[in-house]
Amino acid sequence: METTSRPAAQSTVSDSPAPGAQRTTAPEGKAGAAAQRAVDGYLKAPFPWYGLDEAFTGPRRLMQVGAAADGTVQHGAMGHGDEPSIRSEAAGTEKERFAVVITVAASPVRRSGDGTGVLDATTVSSAAWLAGSGLLAHTWPAQLDHSLRDDWLDQQTETAFELADDMSGPAWSTLSLPVDGEPTPFHYRESEFGWVLAGSTRTGVHIGAYGRGMSAYGLGFSAVEDLASYIPS
Image 1 (tube, rainbow, N blue to C red):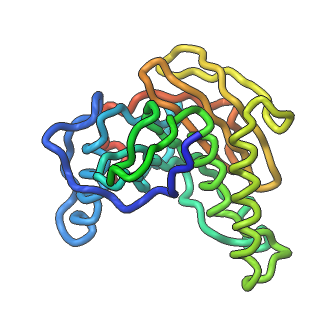
Image 2 (image 1 turned 135 degrees about the vertical axis):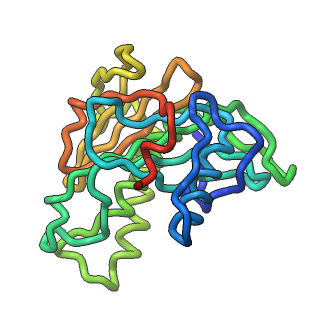
């Protein structure tokens, strides 16, 4: 699996939008400028983005894209529902209801952007790793002291990597969810912090997702036709 870094800062806009994603304009002002930079990063991707399908009627938002050293967009995340925060369970994290969908470009073994090495192929394990580490980034066990969170996060992130590298292991079960209306198999696991799932689409991308407070069993995914639906008005 590809040990890609956590989602990075957004990139600049390309001349053409991602397949299926219409070019859109963010609101004016400072907030609008920041939103437009986020949109530009998503538009630069050479692959379709996925989010929850139309059955989900709650708020949507853009999060971050991750790019290689040469600026090529490799993955990104779309948020649905509440905006997750790093809070302990005692502070009410269990009341949050959110699902984050991560799209990962399917890529073969290839040379790194700086030409100094080789990157592994991206697989469903790549999506599982990004989803697992994403869930942990918004988790803070109630019994954990603030000064120990970094150590805990490092340990749990390593565990998430190991789990993602063993998709046939006992930690994972399988379920079928619709992707563009077609039943699609996903790997799925739950923890005390939330759930993680990962699968592949017929359009050549891998989907990872994580969430809390929303059941994964009732979700469906579809290609994002218009990024405007992920920009607050």
